[in-house]
Length: 200
Image (tube, rainbow, N blue to C red):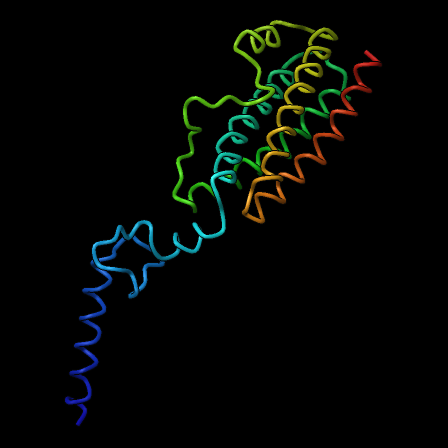
């Protein structure tokens, strides 16, 4: 009796193993996947694809390099001497806020099976040019602090514009919430930077 009971079980295990081998490296694939379909776009990816749209993808692809430059600008000012602590404190907070957001958005793009790179032909509001970055690196002391604040205000205004586009057109709840957070935080920081500029 035991032998007869084990045979169907063994056959089931073998069949399951064969099925899994056919979908190896595809977490979340289900038996309902249609034959001949690209398994990379099925399963868990299918559910992820249903809760985002093109606006969400573009928001992440554009905001990641935008945030990355804000961190680079902050790093430049933090390496300088004779910068007011109010300005270095702001730069530190910008880095602390935006680095985790970059990680979050990279995670979304990975889950959505989307490229981490922004498609060519798109421009981002508020980005500094190579010449702008060179000027920031060359500036010293109070002049550097003023330039950093002026540039970062423009940079933040660009991020807010992109975030408002996501707020209007986005579908993914987490991405829309992040856009709200960015608008709130960066509008507040713009006011802070304008205040700081008036004291330098």
